[in-house]
Length: 168
Image (cartoon, rainbow, N blue to C red; front, side, top):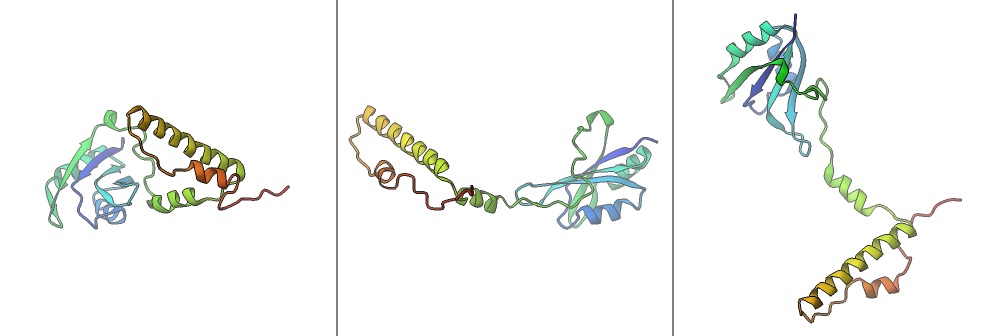
């Protein structure tokens, strides 16, 4: 017996992995199930792939469930041929999806404590960008003077806000 893969589209809200596994197991053994979700929010993208133990079962399910009305949505079900299945399709299937907290991750990265070497590198990049901006303005014939980072960099040389001390 070769396994059969079913594409399920137009999935309604609330019909997720646990509910889908329970629903489709009435037709036969469900080997793997993968609901496509957004990495950012963790919300459903509205389509899924279900692998049945037998390809005949997948064909029967596709015929039965195509255009099936569920929670005000018409489900679209098609059998996916084995050559169209991507090798990484089942990565992350059969386990709970957790959305990554990108907001807090980026905030933590931005606010992390830096040592003196990292601080000097950051300040030198800011000053270099500012000098480039001033040169570009001068080239365009704009006579504009702004305080910028150069004055501040001279005052607080090698003095990061959050100092990370390394133990020796």
